[in-house]
Length: 219
Image 1 (cartoon, rainbow, N blue to C red):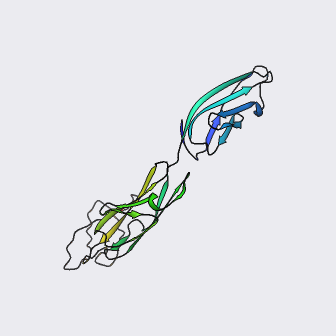
Image 2: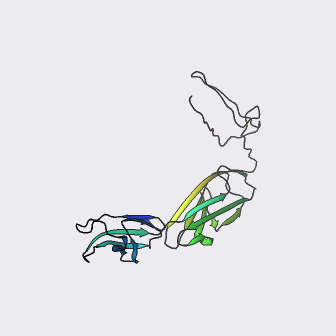
Image 3: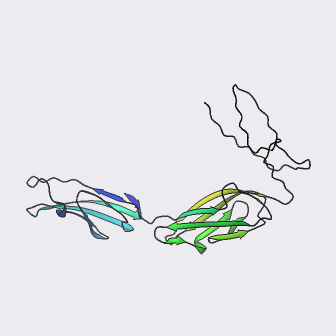
């Protein structure tokens, strides 16, 4: 079996002894080839098992000093880092001339808090953006960006998290309102029908991107 470092591992076993019946926990020994004796009894949880390949032995000794042993092999692997993007928020919209604050963190069970070159920022449009907890960038390419924060730990493990942001270019206008000024509408359908709604755009608008989000339910 394979586990991740920091995971709680349940150890459970059974035994039988014709003469003694029930044997006290002090004579029920759990032993690992990496860490030695680490527990007693038939059922317990061991947190923070050491990284590596363990052969686990369960030894039962009765009142006649007769012993029997069962074994199992387990592997405990390093835990991957956990990155988090604090800003910008998913779906945020910026002008191309805006400065955008990128703030991210990552924690790792073995390494603790990851910083500096352990954190890498990339954009689906601009490629590599920089490293570290904070970036303050402007003049990103106009359009929708998939922003990814990758965290790398000293075990060579890598994890990522991503958000989308929209950058509106110079001279562009982001239209997100209907002609009546609302940014969202609730529409009820009693029968199968088509409904048309109009967005408000400047007369000189050159539309390069359009999207519609629809959410609803059926009673």
